[in-house]
Structures are given as C-alpha cells and as structure tokens.
Image (cartoon, rainbow over all chains, first blue to last red; front, top):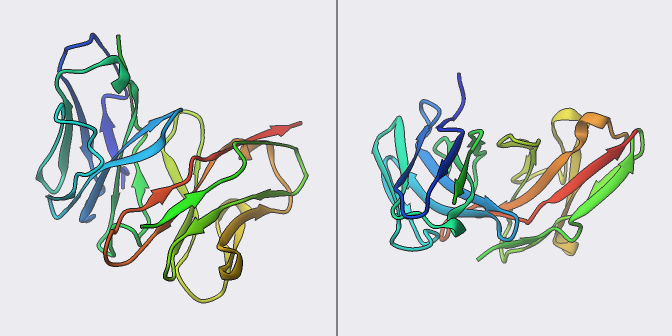
Length: 116
Length: 114
C-alpha cells in the first residue's frame, strides 16, 4: 500500500489567496484526520471524518478553514483567504475502524504551507 | 478530556547510551497510549501502543515503554541509542467513547552525539 498521500508537499502563497490541500487515505480506512503542526502550538487536530462524515470540527480555527470528504478516497482542506499565521505543516492521517482515539493513525508526509 | 505532558523539550544523548523519554497523561479511565516518532521532514510513525494487558510494551526499532497507572506515566526507553534514532518523539493519549480524539504531547526532540 502506498500509505497516506498528500499533495502538494510544499505550498507558498500570498496572503489573501485560496489554498487547497489534498489527501488520499489508505484504502479501507474509515477515519480521516487533519492536523496542523507549528512550533508554538505543537500538533493540533483540526477535524476528523468517519465514513466521509465530519464528526468533530471543533479544532478548525475559524471560518476561513473548511474541509470536505466527498468520497472514501479523497479529502480536501481549504483555507480562504489565507493569512501568514496559517503557515504550518498540515498532516493528514487515517485509521481503520476501531475509533478515533483508540486505533493506530497512519500519517501522510505533510504539506508545508508558507503564506507570505 | 484527556491530556498529555512531555516534560523534556530537548534531550541529547551519546550514541550507545540508554534513553528514557518521559510522558505523563491525565485521564479518568484506562487510557489508550501511543508513542510516535517523527523524522525531519516526515510524517509521524507509530513506535508502540498500549491498550491493556502487560504494562511493558515492546515496539519497533528496539523501543519499549512501561505503563504505570499509579504515576500516570508511559515512559519510552531504549537500552542503546543509535545515531538514526535522532528525531522528535510524541506521546499521545486516546480514549474510547465520549471525545474520541487522540491528544498529542508537545514532543521531545532527541539529538544523538557520535
């Protein structure tokens, strides 16, 4: 299996632009997670899905952030408009069916976002 | 809700020396505990996990961790560190039912001197 796939690996954009991050989870995994990692705040859970349905989006920082999972093999995290404080590494992870907090999560390589 | 603390931000050890990374958690019931490792520029990889049973858990790359309920700790150990172990290590705590989030500590960065 190819593991969790994220694209792009690096994104540099100007403040105010729309940014879309993409994730393909491991086939057969029912849970998908979006995390943000910064030096100041560490690894934060933004949102997670179960069977394509958003379960908990309480970590999404504000309305500029949105996430979708149109099918079992694809998810997007969109920031519109982007701001310099959104600069971070964004990780996607997936797990099988045992539950969000109880099963091994498999992480993608991350997308390093820089907003100028 | 559960929480986890990693008291050491940065640890430096010599190659061949033993290693212990500390992790303390807060949760009212039996936690699900994990250690992940992140190499530079990479995603996180699971080292080991504890759900129940034997409190000494063996993981990959020669790592082990011991769950101590009385101390609310889940410390990671390795008897002899290799230069390739230099990375950042994250402890995480999960729970079944209620809030099912996996909560991560802030991480401990390990430097290995030759």
